[in-house]
Image (cartoon, rainbow, N blue to C red; front, side, top):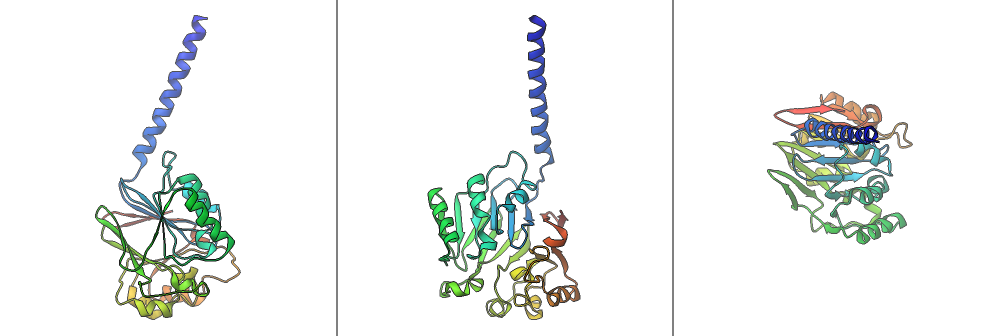
Length: 280
């Protein structure tokens, strides 16, 4: 009996040691840089911003629960919290994954443009948000979220703009983040003709291309205004919309902009150090 008792104690100590080693592995393997993870969620947009030693913001969540696998590959085992959800606009390919995120990651705040869809699915999302006690904040141009020295700023729509459900794309929150001095611009699904009216000079390092690379979302004038070095395109393989449009890809290539698209490259991770560090 004594030998058996010692064996149990030793076995228990080995388990504790193993768990301790796993814990230290995750701690030591964590980056000390803020990171943007542009997630592969098929035909849709989803971006996780993981601020170093601070909170996490999710901008859009793709069409369905596939976002959970994408998030899981970018957060370690002990990270069970996403603080703020930002929805660009009320189209399913941008909000469908929020249902599962709310249940699993228990966010505290839901930020959107205040333009609702009458669809049953969107109304169900609003009910889930209410039932889980999230603060709902409607934002417009000039509103900001500050995280230390970094900022996430709403650029559009402005207070005086009104949108109907028939024009949800141009109601998209246009969001600009400034992280460690680097600028990232998220255009939602807004049309280039609309964007050119509101953009003065938004020179940026990273551009989340509008509307999954649709020909209506990007043109040469717009790209001249923002002058990105990197273009991110969230798009599903063999999608029925033929996104991204060849004319958009050709234009980006002609301007020497580095292109990453989720249908070919999968998820893309960008860390903000002295330089941008791009991984997968």
